[in-house]
Length: 140
Image (cartoon, rainbow, N blue to C red; front, side, top):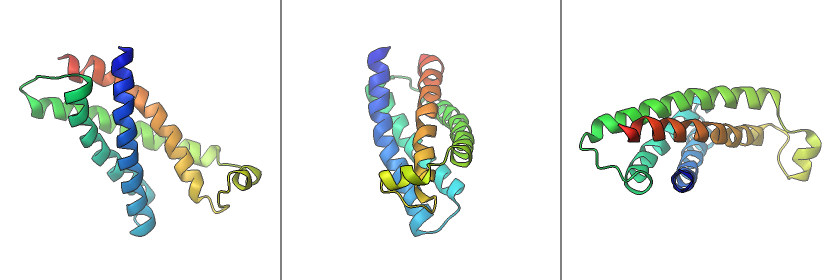
């Protein structure tokens, strides 16, 4: 199980890059709502992660790809709810102090508090996604 978690985490890292890129593009460049941008980035990354995890992590040969993908996405949507919930709580309650922002050369306007909160939320969501997919999606 540890090797699968490491593989899942590796794929999750590429998903995180996709997620952050899409979120940044939609939020910062297109000026869309940050929760919509977060959701879009998360879903696109989850779709990419499904196909990579199917092949590399779980070596799935399930012929019902649509059902398996649907299960993965349902777990991902639950993860998205967890992600947005923690994102909201972390951003609102644990924003970086002014001294920390200066130390890390972050802006004072809160722009990077959102991305710090998003990173924390991703860690929490990854744990949920791995175990739910390990025991449900790729165990059927």
